[in-house]
Amino acid sequence: MTRPDIRSQTEREIQRQFEVWREPSYRVRQLLHWLYAGRAASWDEMTNLPKSLRQRLGETYTLAWPELARRQGARDTTQKFLWRLADGALIESVLIPASPALYGEPSDRHTLCVSTQVGCAYGCKFCASGLDGWKRHLRVEEIVNQVLAVERLEGGGGRTINNLVIMGMGEPLANYENLLPALRILNAPWGGKLGARKITVSTSGLAPQIRRLADEPQQFRLAVSLHGATDQTRGRIMPINKKYPLGELTAACEYYQEKKGRMITLEYILIAGVNDGLDQAPPLARLAHRLRARVNLIPCNKVEGLPWERPSEAAQEAFLAALERQKVAATLRREKGGEIDAACGQLRLKTERMFQRL
Ligand code: SF4
Image 1 (spheres, rainbow, N blue to C red):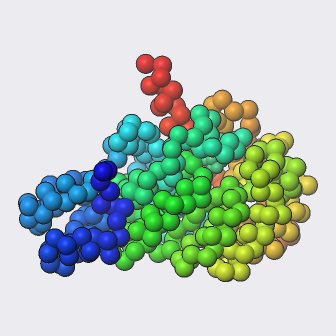
Image 2: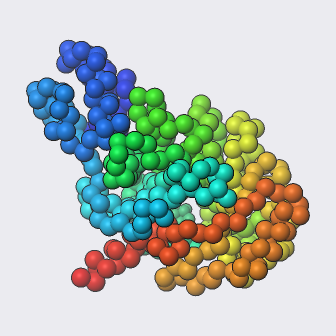
Image 3: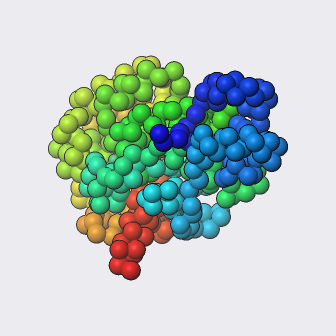
């Protein structure tokens, strides 16, 4: 029988196991402290747990920890972490220092973007993650550990990450069964202690799972990768639009908004000559008003192997101004990670291809 990973277990599950072992309840608190505040990477680090208990834990559970394969970027800029998992799979997390334009927060705040799958099956035409197809879902602990491993590397024992966006490699809501337990652990007072409103789940538009997420008790934020305000334009770059066209997607988002309030952001990657035409601004504004959503405009990055171009700055500003004229709360993001391959999937792809060439 395969052992579960300790960081896939809830406090209640660990308590039950400790009761069976006749361990006092304070040992549960000590263990949880090592797992989350202490970000322990091995049982041996848990020095105030008796050796016999550590051994028993090691026989019952795994304690996975990702290996840092590569790191790009400087401490005060966007940093990209490439992790090698136990089976050799590579995944990425990106740490982005906050800019007031983006979040209205002081600059000591950091946002971490984490992955949920190895590769991606959704094949959005502008994205490097899907270029080599889908490999597997990440397990609960593999999602949780990205947060803990970055905080451990950034050091200090304090809190580095104030915002979490589930927007890295993979379609998060396609891995719902592992994502939600991971988010509950990261949100729990005994676990990651991250407020639900500080956690944004991104999706390319899986309408049924958006409704399911709306029915969860936690107030997670939702970011919808729209990238086109009409079925024709969106369908050109997002194959998912065939399965869940805008009408269906919008109805699911409306359901989310009714349940959660003002929690939706519409992500819109601006691609020259594809979706940056001003004809897209009025339907985008209508959608934003209907969903009471803000719009994040993201000029696209050049991705090796893909033909898309970033619009000129004038075209970006014109699109923003067209939305603002229609009273949409919109921001234009200067992609901070452009120079270090921060578009999702790029670093993994480059490294994998490099390894293939060796
Ligand atoms: S944008 Fe997201 S959903 Fe689309 S291919 Fe990339 S990782 Fe997958």
